Image (tube, rainbow, N blue to C red; front, side, top):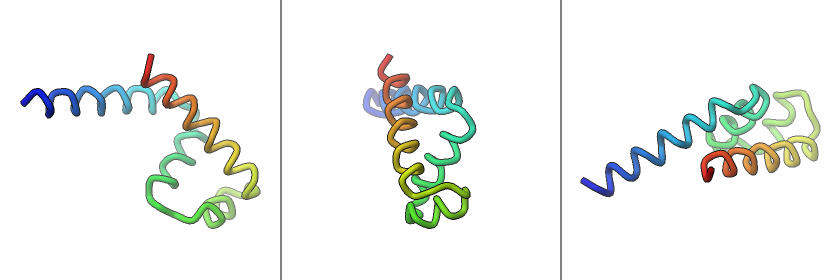
Length: 69
């Protein structure tokens, strides 16, 4: 029961932090969580592969920082 409560708390923290992100970050992270190839995601979003990788890294760093604080 304690493990389930801890997991639920972590999920709630993650979702709260996720909602604070900008729309572009949310979209990039959603695509990534679906397991799509980054090349396809970049093409669908109309950005370069390099930009997508950089932006994804920045977005994930922001998300982790918010979850940890």
